[in-house]
Image (cartoon, rainbow, N blue to C red; front, side, top):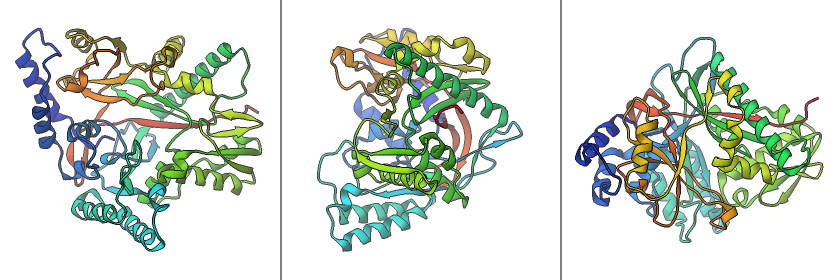
Length: 447
C-alpha cells in the first residue's frame, strides 16, 4: 500500500495542464524549485521519515506515490480471503515499524558494545507506530550517530532499515483470490514453456519461488510484475504476522516438498550485507532443515536454490520474466486464457524523446481519474550491450522532469493502473491510496 494519498494530484495535474493549453507539451515540466515546493507540501513528517540525506526530496516524493517498501512511504499487510465481497481494511489501521533490520554491512565494522546498542534500537523501533514519528526519528538519528554510513552504496544507506506493517489484514473475496491463483499458474506456465522452446530443453522447473503483483480496477485484474525468486516471501509474512499477533503461515511443507529432499541454498551478497535478505535466506534454510531436508549453503549470485544440480531460477527464465517487452509478448499469446479470469496486461510503449508522443499515449490509456501518472522504466537491453538489463519502475507524474526521456535513450512508458482504495491510516491520514496484491508461489514437480 502506498503511504501517500492521491487526491492532491488531481489539482496539480489540472493546474499544470491548464497552463499548457489544449495542445500540452512535455518539454515544459515544472522546474526543480516548483517540484520541490510540491514535494514539501505533500510530504508530512511520517512520509519523510527514514529519508537518507543522499536522496533528493523530489525523488522521495515519487517513492511515496508507489508501493515502495521504505519506512512509511509504503506498507505491507497480510491478505485474508473472505466469503464476502469485502475489499480492503475493515477500519482504520495502525502501521508499525515492525519490519526493522540492523544492516550486517554495518555490524561487521562495529565493536560488541555498539552492536548491542544498534540491536536495542532495532527492538524499540519494531514496537513504534506511524503516530510516534518523533520517537522513530530520534531512534534513527541515534543509529546514524552510532554507525554512520560513510561509503557510497546503491543499497543500504543507513544502519537501521525498516518498513511499515499493519495490525490488520487486507481482505479480498474468495472469487478474486481464485482468479489470481488461476492467473498466476497460467502466467508461470506460459513463461516456462517459452523458455523450454527457446532452449530446446525440457526443464522440470524454471524457478523455485516466485511472486506476481496484481492491481485491481473495477472487475479487471492487471498483471503488474513477476519476480523470481520471491523476495519478501518470508520477511513480509514474519513481520506482518507479528504485528497482528498471528502465527506465520509460510508454506513450510510446500517449500520442503519442492526440493525433492535435498537442496543447496545460495547465500548472495545481499544476504551477507542486508538484514532483509539475510533473514529471508537464514529462515528458509532453518525451515527446510526442520522438515528433514538435507540443506547445504553456498556463496553464489544469480540464483536462489540448486536442486539435483540445476539452479533456480533458470537464467533464461529470469531474464524473460524481467524483460517486460519480451514478457508481455509471451503473455499476449495467452490473452484468451487470461480473459477467462478477467486478467489484463497494462498497455505500454517505447518512446524516443518527443514533446507530444507521451501526451498522446497518456490521453489514450488514462483511466477515469486524471492523476497524470505513468510508469517509467528505462529500457536497457543486454542484446544492445547497454546497461545490465535491469531497471526499477518509477511512478512518474507527467508534470515532473522525470517524465522526460533522455536525449540519447528510448524509455518504456507503461499505463498507470489506478488501483485505489480509501484507507484511514493512523499517523498518515485518510484518503485514496494505491495498492498491489502480491501472490507468492512455490514451484515443484507434479506428482
